[in-house]
Image 1 (cartoon, rainbow, N blue to C red):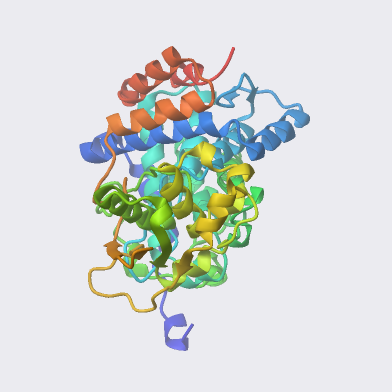
Image 2 (cartoon, one colour):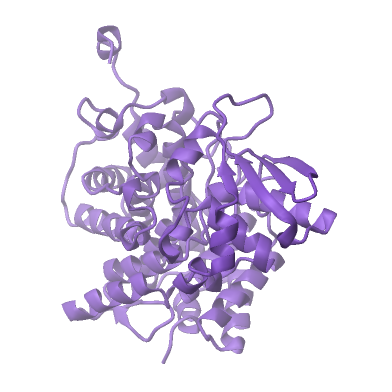
Length: 467
């Protein structure tokens, strides 16, 4: 950092963040934000049910069971009850395990690194609210306070943090979890600041684990760490009151930040209003979805037979190409971060679902052959009008025809958001994947639609747990 910058006192970011979290009230959250929050809560709860079947989630459950800790918080999709921190760990992992969870995209087209904050913040808030027998209004306030903080931190953090290998979902999501848990624990602004300091010392997660089970636990680990940080602060553990902005603090260690992107912007506007949140139509890396949306549109509008496709040329930005490391995936987990696999399955099978990501489909000869026809040709220059996810696509047919298109967003994205009814359909499908009783599924969807009027969130968790 330049010497003249060091001589200036840093903005009081930690105090601003803690004060905002402490001040959030249901009445101060715009109705549009409340409405979108319900949609994203329902989405994540469905993913918790579907993700309860994932191998990584089962391992996390076994780990928690071996600890022998019982408690008041539910592990969704099961009959297990444990301490809030451990319930959040398992539920947060389940919500992200299928890579089907929502994303807060970056504001700038020059940046990559969207954050999957809902899985972290909701799993932490739900576990604490259930343990404390709190209602839907308190849950809603905590959820939005945590989401706003985590997502705005991601807008402000220097891009070097993500590009050097950190997974912002977990390294910044932990602050959202700590904020939500601290709110529900009744901490004031000073106590919340101490919780954020504790969270800063627990922030972790690396992108090198994309395509491996360890990445699937990033959300659960961040949720657990946020709860622990809040609980310790409630018990009197103190931390640096300026942990975010201090020399040697979080931003300094993480690579820097842009104060003008964060300061004075919490709730101005709320992130659910602008730039908004995207919900995934397919269970794979969201950076692939604009290209998938474009391919689906071209196939449908031109009636393309996959057997007539000689090659596909995909042009994402160079940053996305660098992140999507698995052009020839060896297994289903790697396939979730593979542009060639996702396009090949969509083209040949006409759909991509949770059941598409199994090793047997990755190894299918027709899928392997189509992946070999996919060429990745990244662009370096972001043209006017591009988003940070813009993808260009060329479909070369055997008869010499070339079909071209461009997509700046994806289905479920900012230009085509899913409604509550749309996400209810997704929720029902995820619950069915888990073999969940239809009556409970419908009752849960109806309850989330009016969650702020719920006197005790245990009525909701009862519908999402067995026994």
